[in-house]
Amino acid sequence: MIGKIISSVVISLITFNIAHAQQTVTFDDYLASLKDKAIQAGVSQNTINKHFSKIKVFKRATVNGADKSINLESYIPQNAPEITVSTARVMFKEQEDALITLGDRYGVQPRFLVALWGMTSEFGEQKGNFPILSVTASNAYSGVKEQFYIDEFIAALQIIDSQQVTYEQLIGSSTGAMGHMQLMPSQYLAYAQDGNGDGNKDIWNNQFDAFATAAAMLKDTGWKNDETWGRQVSSVNPVPQYLIGADHTQTFNEWQELGVRRYNGNDLPKRDDMQVSFLMPDGEKGREYLVYNNFRLLQAWSKKEHFLLTVTYLSERIKNPPIK
Image 1: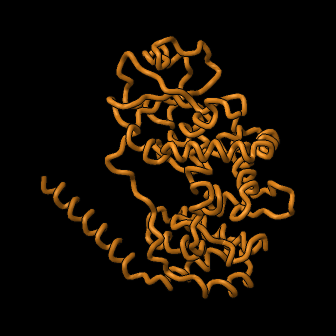
Image 2: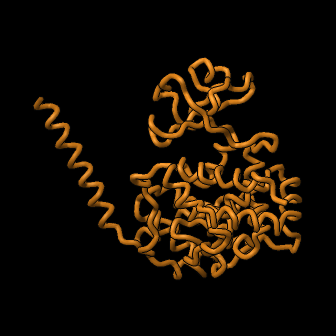
Image 3: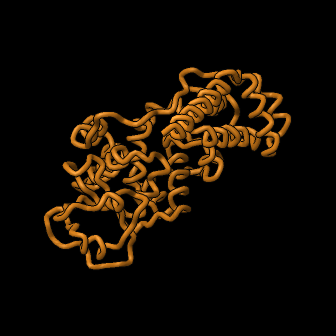
């Protein structure tokens, strides 16, 4: 018992000292360490000299925490109400030819691109207007997802360094997501596309560049144009907790053996060529889903199952009934 108490005290002191040390590091000192990391990553001295003085601590830059007290029954109608559905369908119809061309080029069904557009930036109305270097540096300084934001900060510098985008153009949300499709700097750096053939890769002002960039990322990571995202199901037996979640996969046949059925109670497809995950985002009294690889690729935007299932809901509403 005494040993446990001593161990607990030691752990508490270590935790206190780490927290205290973090509090004593000023933002300017932290920025100096980021400068060293940027130099090591190959960012030019010219970019560093020109732009580091513009980087300020950004108090509004906070990483979103977990959603509290939500369930799909309330989350979906709140975040994809009928006005969003009708807007998505109108937008799809107005730009159908260009969307189909992009879809064919990258092998990504356009309805998913429009659904992501609606859910991430409200069809371009909420793209964010915060300086990305300040946002990513400040979020890294906060200590939440520190390495993630260090990497995004360096990616943002590399974008400027490549002269694709100026410092003034590099703006986004308080989480560092940018443009019509709310892509992170590292995603832009890796996948930026000229979607409309005008010679630019402008995901901030041209939705087709943003669509093409998002589609290129999905294609590169393994999106399958001949598959959808998943389906709602029901289970006749409780599914063990360790099998629940997008990180665990099994075949349809294996889920069938565990008592998972189509939502109407019929058997699942008799196939073992797909790796499928079981989700139960609201617990044992909520909806149940089997989701496929395409769904897992949508996690590039968010790991939150409520958000992703709302994206897929909107994609289904764009598809059905068929737009005439």
